[in-house]
Length: 288
Image (tube, rainbow, N blue to C red; front, side, top):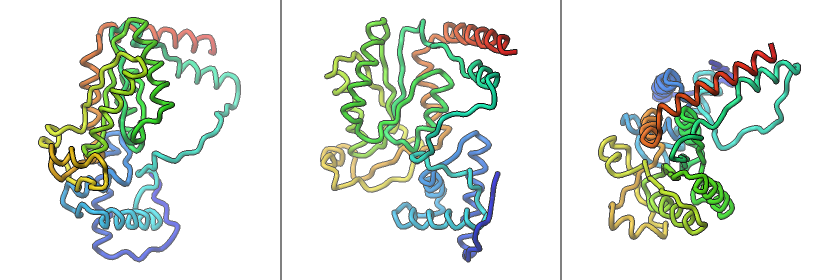
């Protein structure tokens, strides 16, 4: 993994010690197959009582991580910005290469014979990589809401779900969001607007919920008093709120996996996977 120094940085011993702890967290997650955002690194340090949970600590961590990367002490690939990326056309060296790639990426709908149609929706774009890893394992579509979903995307989703209803499927959306005034309200908003647009769908909020907060004890934040929904939230839950990012990726992965499996006929799913691999083999044999 690239630790490339571009600049000499003067970092105090306390900063060097913190970089060492950051690298230990990074190494642990890379062994599990995850990369992290800066926000996730921050919450891992907060949960270990290494730094305080406040905006100043988060800003200081951002500066330190930047300096650590510039000076070659933190892997450049270890921390992702999942909201910004380059878009470009794919390129191939020869026709055979694209045919082999097509064979590898050939997928059938593994849920075609299932009684349910499942999607996983997550409030934050920064967590879509974690969600996608779990969802892809079971050929389950996932969607980054980026807060309250736009009218356009909500209507489009409703049309997609209506088509599944008409094909005889029961539709379920597994929803993940922050436990704060807006994050809680987003689950209600998704349910009400999809039903308004004519979709027969059940929204199941699988995280972040109070029993999970009590079990995993993520670090709290003050509820945003400027949020117009804060009054009802505080009356029910108190003045603290909690971010979804504070849960470890493997916990989110496990939650998503467990809930998908509840709706999945695993025998039908495995039969479809066998057929998919047989058809991929046919494509590879044509190329070779």
